[in-house]
Image 1 (cartoon, rainbow, N blue to C red):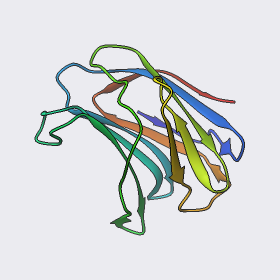
Image 2 (cartoon, rainbow, N blue to C red):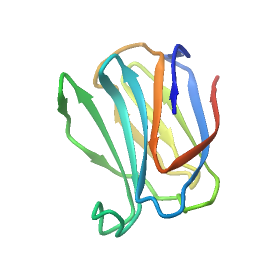
Image 3 (cartoon, helix red, strand yellow):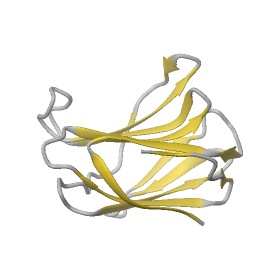
Length: 133
């Protein structure tokens, strides 16, 4: 799923709810800037697709054809076939992610933009709502 031309500006919060599909080993959420991914969130379920030995959420940036340093922190409140909700607040310095278990992740705004307009959701997820406030 791709969402285009919906501005997320500094001070705004993006709220996403969805359901991870049973049998899929991961899903991804991205905040895009052209061909770059300013914010990449990969939710990886344990032991599937050879991706991970433990369930984890991995954050990163893809810029000018290269991945940055991965960040692994926060909880893992995701379960197959169960509704999740998380928020991402954009500041000049970071993306503040708050997961449904209350975990906070402070991921740097490596591209430094004050506005992003395009978003994608890939692989094993059904997005139920997408809201910017």
